[in-house]
Image (cartoon, rainbow, N blue to C red; front, side):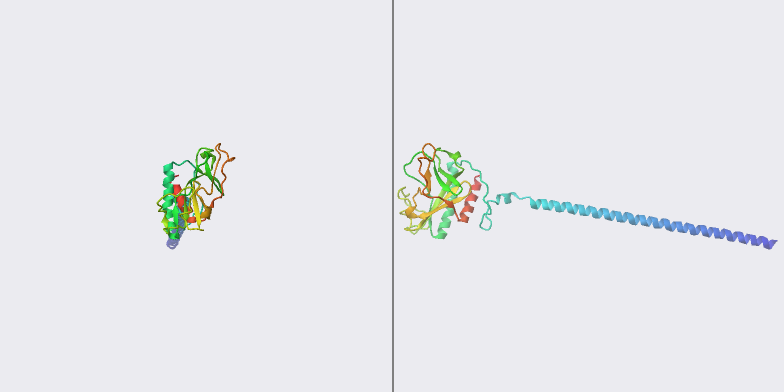
Length: 275
């Protein structure tokens, strides 16, 4: 009986031991599964954080690129005014100038600036230049004008037909010529030539006179003719006293757009200062 009882006790202890081992094994499995789930969650959280940080970085980079592109696309004030400035010695496009009545002082100042520039150009070319590009003798009370490829340009305003009748107005002008005196550059004359005399006594015979007129549309127009055919009034006509062309003095010659690009650049720069 004692052996049977001992056997029973041994079996019961073995059974308990098996149950405990099974329970511990299950708990270990559960613990490993929980640990794996935590690690998976942490990895997922890290991946989410990385993805959000990457998206945020890309968004900031995109915004910075857009800001840079916007800055590059907006022209600066100097680039806007640059329509007037020289580009490798050339003006790409004639800027838009607003026609308005300048005072006589303003017109004289603009013409003086251009004349000073023209003196330097004349010296380089071995020519002389004079500010006397237009005058006339006895005439009526109609406005004087010049014909250009872009229309009539008023040169003298007697209010017949008046400033508003013309789309373009001549601010000033100069005339280049081969000096008979041999003195190049500035026109250092002891006297102003008479209207009838014109350029005949100051220019070399059988040479051309180059008249430049400076118009308020930003264009320099030019008239070229031998000195024998170039009076001070050459290239200009006059309206009749009643402000019509009937009965007026027609122009004898037409001006053309000057091919002197440096003169075009200089005149646009000067005119822009007074807009």
